[in-house]
Length: 320
Ligand SMILES: NC(=O)c1ccc[n+]([C@@H]2O[C@H](COP(=O)([O-])OP(=O)(O)OC[C@H]3O[C@@H](n4cnc5c(N)ncnc54)[C@H](OP(=O)(O)O)[C@@H]3O)[C@@H](O)[C@H]2O)c1
Ligand SMILES: *[C@@H]1O[C@H](CO)[C@@H](O)[C@H](O)[C@H]1NC(C)=O
Ligand SMILES: *[C@@H]1O[C@H](CO)[C@@H](O)[C@H](O)[C@H]1NC(C)=O
Image 1 (spheres, rainbow, N blue to C red):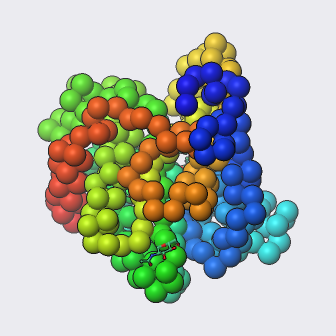
Image 2: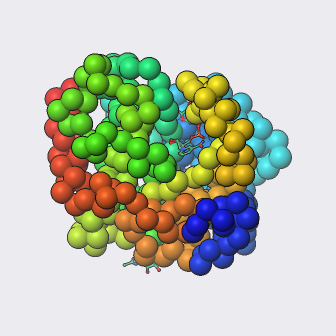
């Protein structure tokens, strides 16, 4: 999809485009009986995604670090849609301990898991190490989700097998994956404050999301698991994500306002890839404006994808 269709909202091959909303791309789709986990579901794109999944009948688990905000969000959805099934569970993705506690708690609920939306994220924060001593954007956007996905995968496999319904994993990446460090991922200098660049570190973490989805997709295909893994770029949407760069993003928005979307449009690609039957069997792809999109050279690299997988496993083992 070109720049022109982004501005005009002209639909692409899928029948949807930049102007489509999350409700439109899931119209007439019944999600009753499906369980979905949405990370960072208490605000922005994640909240709208949770609302629309609930509207379509899914049982939504909002995984949030701020459970108060998430409970507020749940209340707001239930007010308009009283039959919605929504639970709030605590999850801080920057802490591997919290990710493990979340997975234990979720698995103890004995629910199936059909869909996992890896949505939570931070952007452009000043250099900071997580409690596990990993650079914060990599820790939150990639490593926490890496562990989370791995810990929920058995449940997803069992669910897909016993129900015959395809499981889906959707990763929120970004067009920002194009703007990373020249080497792609700084395996050896991840925590080097001297070379830290807040924009490139965000791009690096979003590249990691794509590489991870790619490698997992390959592994699941090999195993014959009926689970697809895809990545999306939601578009440009003014949300809390801009908290570390509000003035800059407002200035950019001023001159590029034609490219920006509202939140219902911002959640459309996530909901389309998570729920629309058109995408049955489609895996390892990257979507923007509800249509498949090209990725960067780094994001296409099988070698880098494999290297990142092994690096992430090693990192997780080392903090145990
Ligand atoms: N908005 C855009 O233009 C844009 C463009 C490209 C990609 N994206 C991606 O879209 C996703 C959603 O972003 P958004 O725009 O909807 O931003 P948002 O409103 O800030 O939502 C992000 C969510 O992630 C949560 N979160 C942050 N750190 C967390 C942690 N350590 N543990 C658990 N949850 C955490 C936030 O929780 P708190 O409320 O507690 O902070 C919030 O609920 C992100 O992955 C982002 O990279 C957005
Ligand atoms: C994205 O893709 C893989 C496969 O779903 C997952 O394991 C990884 O943790 C995800 N990362 C994020 C946050 O997008
Ligand atoms: C995989 O999921 C799809 C879509 O739900 C379904 O049509 C298909 O029969 C499933 N395949 C297997 C092997 O269970």
